[in-house]
Length: 275
Image (cartoon, rainbow, N blue to C red; front, side):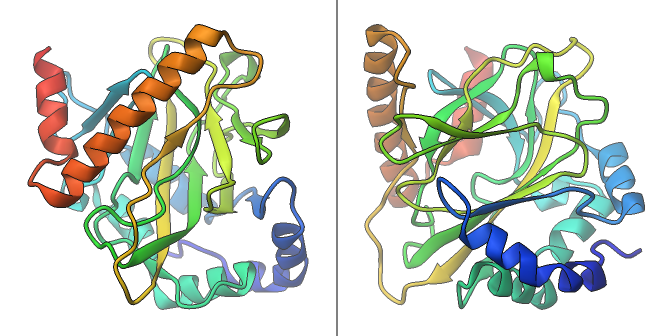
């Protein structure tokens, strides 16, 4: 089964490079119909729903986010593993390097924080910049995010748009609907503020689904740990600004524990499910 149409990606590479590198507020691009249609349909059909007890899914539940994520490849279906493997292949990595101008890109075999994501009604992800050094591979520097949305029939009034904010969080620069087979790729830096902070308001039998893959480069030396950095929007209440900042420090402490102790997302998820 063909996953990615490289002929199509190659044909539009020149214009896509310019779009990516000149984008505001940071380098990004939106590509619709990203996967071959058959692959996208099968990926959605196989999307592994979190069981009632959580199962292999991690629960990311704190003040700044409420979602579920699956990072274990062995708990995913054959199609899902095949798509992730293709998007981690040398040919695809080569295309990503040409698009972004970033050399030495590597996929993340751990899917740390990535993999399948599901957000049900009431879920959200506050505006943030992502962790920049790999939690368990301290010499790896995060360079690119790839977000592939799997939401058929998504309605705008259900919220869930990906918001991109400029440096300093003074204004929103873009709002991207999470439509089926739409891919967003962006450069991950200290300034790439993004998220979908408005709680999802979809029907109870639906959810905001996506596949998230992150790409790194090897710095050759251990990097300082830079965890996810959350920010409140400028028009939000003073109390929310305080709570976002407090939770940000909790996330920072947790990130240090993940790097230097056996603690991991799976352990925390089991604790949260028992609360």
